[in-house]
Length: 540
Image 1 (cartoon, rainbow, N blue to C red):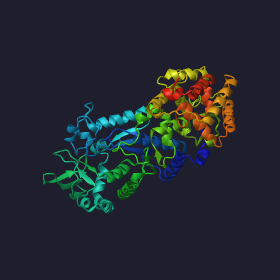
Image 2: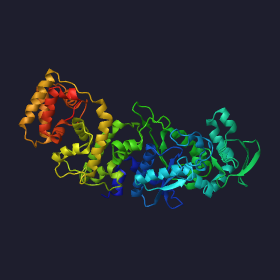
Image 3: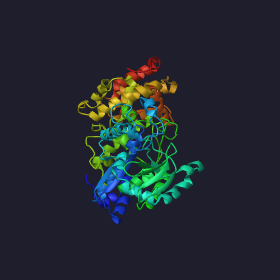
Image 4: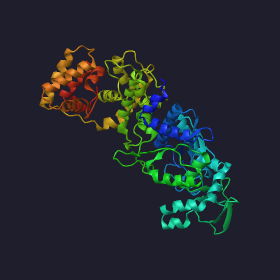
């Protein structure tokens, strides 16, 4: 659905808010280059990770929203900082000794330890592009090495020499005494060793475009800053990129607020300006600690995609980017079901509500049709990821056909071919069940009150028609809980989950029975009351 500009401007969805602010800036000062440039950064010393996905995805959301508010064309650069000198050898590399012999050199000057590309940096850049292409992002790849060596940065580098002292004055207060003694925004690349040198600069000559420094042997060297013979310290490097490329929008993590402020000051010294953007919150691990690449305490994209879909990952990245969120396996089921629910809402939503629906943004205004899981709802209930997990728990599933046997009863026309999203969820749910639910399953016996309630539930189900709808079943379950004096009905449902499923939470029980079947549910209750589930660990 096309949403008019006036309606979009009423939306509080964060991509639209960001795009509106950028559109106002562009209207005040249209870019001389003829387009608005969005940018994301990537450090290629390590593999692309879930944060890389999040930054490119979120930037794309703002870019798409901007295109709906402005006629100015846009471009997105994904920029690789591959001129950085390698400081340490990542633990997960082959040929680590070989890589270690090249410490200090730009990543694009180190042989590829994987043996597939002309350099370590080229290998990682190829992995980045493959990673982004996997998700269909529209971007232009940019290499720091190519920009330095081709002369793209040369004019701005001369400006760095002209304003060298002013740039140092901005950065020095943030450095310790030892670092202040050797600090220079310009890092020469040694012509003898190829290493990026962090050495004091003895003299700068803007007219000649050179710097003078002592090399590692103690000799004075005068060297051009052009053509890739130097790179800048990273705060100055960030500013260089903003100014030389005329970047209009770049977001970054909350941990870079102070660095971005310094880079913005340097950009202004160089005659440019800091891009628009915002600082997103960092992710937290299972224990509420910040995710760290070096600690490896986060979740990788491949790990997410073992248990969930690309759509659920995109939704997780879309929701509340300025709020710290736990990034762990247990968030995936909720994201899958939230995505399905949001997609189900699309056809009936008015434009104002649709503009705030994350799914509308995720699909650039053209979300798919056919239901949140590829099936239309039956009896008002969508076959959810949570439901699939609990079916897997009951039958101890390790094969998709075990779940499809029940799905076929619930939706006879559905097949893995006709409902590919649902089939993907089946595979993901089985993987999640096998890795996380099964190891933690712990059945228990019913106490006297619970036994009486379960016996009545079995009799009640026996009296219902085989095709009873989920709501009718749910009503009976509620009434049984009330009759057996469960003051808090949550305790009744928790008992059902613990006794029948071996876990402390589960699906809407009426919906579960509708999918699993009244007959199999009665059999499950009989096994639970007879102690068979406790003895065998569940499964039919």
